[in-house]
Length: 128
Image (cartoon, rainbow, N blue to C red; front, side, top):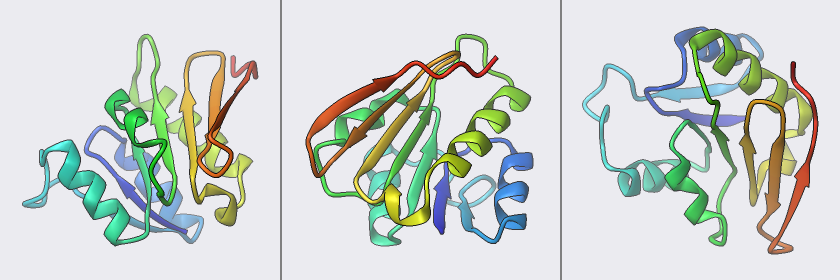
C-alpha cells in the first residue's frame, strides 16, 4: 500500500510499515517538512497515498474523494502509543478498503467514516 506520513509519525512506525511491504513516503527531513495542510493533502492525493497524521484538521477532507486518512488523536501521545495505534489500525483494514476511508483513533475508541456512504460509524473498540 502507498502511504504518506507527516512528521509527527514516529520513525519506528515508518520502518515497521516498510518492513511490512508498504511504500511509505516520509516528509521528515525533506524540503516538504512543515508544508501547509493543503499541500500535504495534495501530495497524498496526487501520489494516491493513504495519509497518516496526528492533525485533526484533515477530518474536513472526509467528504472528498481520497485514498484514505488515518488520524491519531491521543490525550497523551508518545511515540510508542502512536506506533501501536497506527500498526493496529493498518492491520485492521485491507489495502483496498482504505479508498474513501477516514479513521480517527482515540485512546479507547475509533471512529470510521466511509466516503462512499457519507455516513459515520463509531466503534467502541478498547485498545488498552
